[in-house]
Length: 327
Image 1: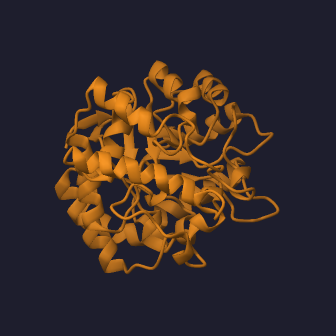
Image 2 (image 1 turned 90 degrees about the vertical axis):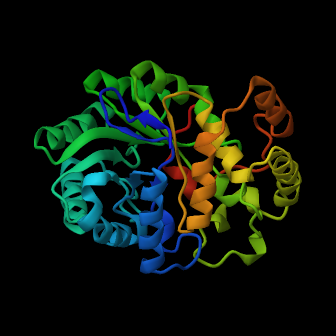
């Protein structure tokens, strides 16, 4: 596994990380033992950066991860997040008291005294990011967190945050399926020496060996409310995805590996963050870190999946409330 730096002066980590949201039923049921086996296999592949949040399964993902950290803490770069409340009337809270409570809860559930990278999961509208950075800097000075990360923010927010202190990583959805970070966050991170941690680099599973069937989504499947999977959009999207999958296999790669390789080709500061509970799927994801794409191949991929090709918005109305828009 190739290594990439997690922010200026940060640790070197695998170019492919592992997100744990899938371990708590976001895309279907799984078992704790399956999740633990997946994490162990990932570590052997060189996937040593594990990402979670206090709201994944309302803390259950962190509790599950604690079982793995008991025996593997020294080999893992650990990231978690705060700032989402799951309260429909007040979904985001970046107040010092709430963030303190969230951090202490995460430390307790994870069974650790220190989180290597701690993200603001969503920025609360109306609260200055400089104020939020001061809270995070206090946590860092206390030794409870290492580096500071921000998630789903606009380039202007990153610029203001950097005026208050260092930002090691920005987490944004980024893939051949969703390319908004190219409108400023990708470049802003490069200028700041921050890592762009690209979540959903295989597009909510659309770059898997078998594209998902929206008719088979369970009630708890996060994709239920995503317009790109709606009947009026999915057939058009599937036609393009099929062409990409054929192209990947013609070149000896799985669609997932090629999709990961494309994400990593966008800059040396980009880290791919797929979430999977399947060892087989994570092997394909990790394979993407070994693929070097030529200029000709990148141009061919662009012809198959040109920027803006996907039909439908990435999020429905409810999920669109948190990510900052900037275009």
